[in-house]
Image (tube, rainbow, N blue to C red; front, side, top):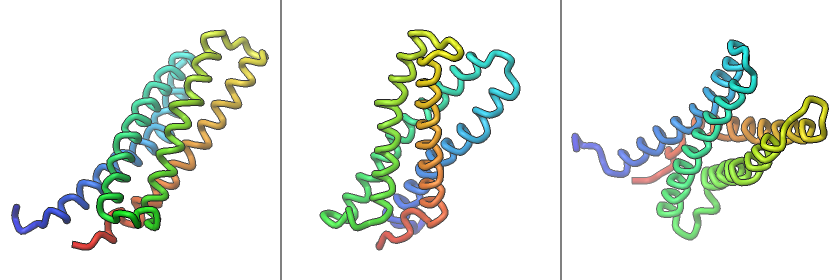
Length: 157
C-alpha cells in the first residue's frame, strides 16, 4: 500500500472522520442555521430545516464518536480511560445522546401541543432550545480541541 503502514492509514481515517463530524457541528450551528433564519421568511420552516440538519449531524456524531471511542479502546486496552481523547469523545457522545434522546423528543412533544407565543409551552421550548444550543457549543469546542491537537497523533506504530 505505497509504503504506508496500516496503523498510519487508520490514524488518517480517524482524523478525517473526526473532521467530518466536527466540521458538521460548526457548519450546521454557525453557518447553516443562522443563514436559514436570516434568509427565509418562514421561521417555522427555517426551524424545521435546521432541526433536520442538526439531527443528521447528531447521527453522524453518534456513528463517528462510537467508532473513534472503540478504536481508542482497542488501541489502549484496559488503560483506555486514561487517554484524554477517549474522555473527550465519550463526553461528546454523552452530550449528543442527551440531545437526541432527551431534549429533542421533549421539544417535539411541545411542538405537537402547540407553541402559542407567550405560553408556558413556548417558554419551556425556549429553555430546552437554549440547553440544546449550549450542548452544541460545548461539543463544537471539544471537537475543535480534538482536531487542533491532532487526534490520533499519539498512536504508536
